[in-house]
Amino acid sequence: MSTRHILLVDDHQIVRDGLRVCLQGNEQYTVVGEAADGLAAIQLAKELKPDLIVMDVAMPGLNGIEAAREIHAGGCMAKIICLSMHSDREFIAEAFRAGVVGYLIKSSAFKELLYALKEVVAGRKYISPAVTDIIVDNYVLQTPGQSATSATPFSVLTSRERQILQMLAEGRSAKQIGLALDINHKTVHAFRSQIFEKIGVDSLPELTKYAIRHGLTTVE
Image (cartoon, rainbow, N blue to C red; front, side, top):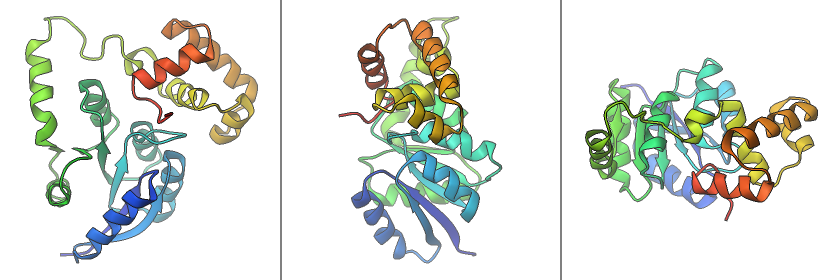
């Protein structure tokens, strides 16, 4: 069996260190790179072309779901496993829509990650048992005709709008956002107006509360 190359993505160094040390004891996997945020992950995925990416969902700058979407849009075929504190249906569903093939709760034991890696390498999807019941219960109890993503930022906003919303909530200026996303700062202002209208807020503090409530930012 050939060695699979892994990119680790988490904004906490101690988490990346722990994952790297654990994976070093398994000859099936080699960690070829690390990133601390979604934007860096996109760049490294292009450069390193890993087989697998283990990535946190909640990261500053660009969260793991949007990063996964951009990574695949850029042509990287890596299989992505998300690690998350979120067990919300909307997060799990949107992660898989973004091309993620594995979803684990961060409290999972390392042996579960190894099992998830084995499953996705074999071409299967993996969802942590810790959230399986939540998904089943939500869909069983869902009112007929009700949208699974009704009134969520994933249904109300576009991917670009969610990226800008997150950065605005984290205190970045229009100029900083423009540089990060390679767009004009005037375009950022236009997006901000659209976001305010779509989510029904009229101030940055309200926007920040919205982003935190829906888990789109790591602002503490």
